[in-house]
Length: 474
Image 1 (cartoon, one colour):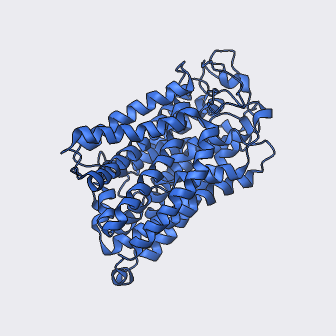
Image 2: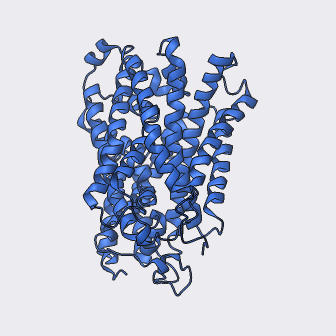
Image 3: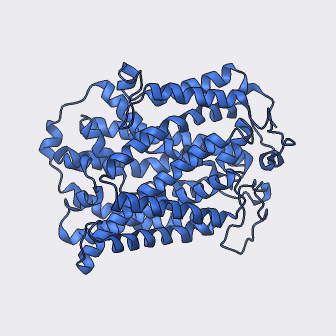
């Protein structure tokens, strides 16, 4: 069991709490805090290549815009729903998941969550380091190629990780404040850059594009959902655990769906517009450099600063959640040290992608598709359980022994774990990526990217049929 201080020093910026539930008297948050958190986490440059991917799959711009709305707003509405559990239990999402899967059975979902967060942090750090390299090339005349300047590349990675560590290490109070105010600064920069990018759009090519079949549109929705809200779903309660018990569920859903939806719709739509005239954006190994090449020289510096800032805001939240997932694994260290461990892992991962690997963007897309399945399977079980579970036992969540109210059978809730595992297997049967092709990947469901929908239905349906959602909850 992780032992940390169970109270917070109201006058201190450092959050000393680990994963233990927040006492009700300390839950004073409100939905607008979460609105800014989710807005800030999604103003990164990665929305542009996601939009470019939609055009590369054959969608016309107007179809890509519809896909952006449904995929991003819809998936973040799910994030908002999971946030309700954080408000109810006052604990991080994967800690609350112990009540569903058992204190030991929860290890599988927690490992997946941690890998997801570490993967997104590596993507953010790698992309930001590319941007910092380009910034150095402009300001100091250095080479912009990572492999040509390995020492500078490592320095760029280290600088970004240090900026991440400062905010994520200090914790919830500082993170919420920084996300809010930094959104205005980097959001304004993104608007200026977006206006300049609009001037480069080939409007003739945009208008001449033929619409794609409905199946491609459906697959696009899956791509955007997996690349946006689904990846954050199991981390959403990490921030909402400080929300006041009086906050309405609808407000939590709206704060996530609207907060993340606004920047994502704009960025994904802009990426699809840019790619309609220049398909190379979707295939770029360094999307930062590809977009920079579209801008006039005088706009390069503010663009790169905006890119780094947006990625930094996303990384703050991701590293914070990864630290909590590390603690949920049962590692007995302080939260700030867990954050440091996660930063070291992503530091090494970024070095690999920048100095060793031949490609960065392809692994990014594969990473999204692979992890969308187990995370969606967890969602199906967790949300079905939420239909009946209104409260959580704080002591049971932290007790890893047979005395825990969530011990079940040997620390495992077999119905939940079986439904989760079965859904993963079935989901991968309908999936195709760089590593394997599922046996059902060439069916209509598989070809249209609906493996994640099947996954959700299987996990939720099997868990409900087995009676897991109807078990007495404390």
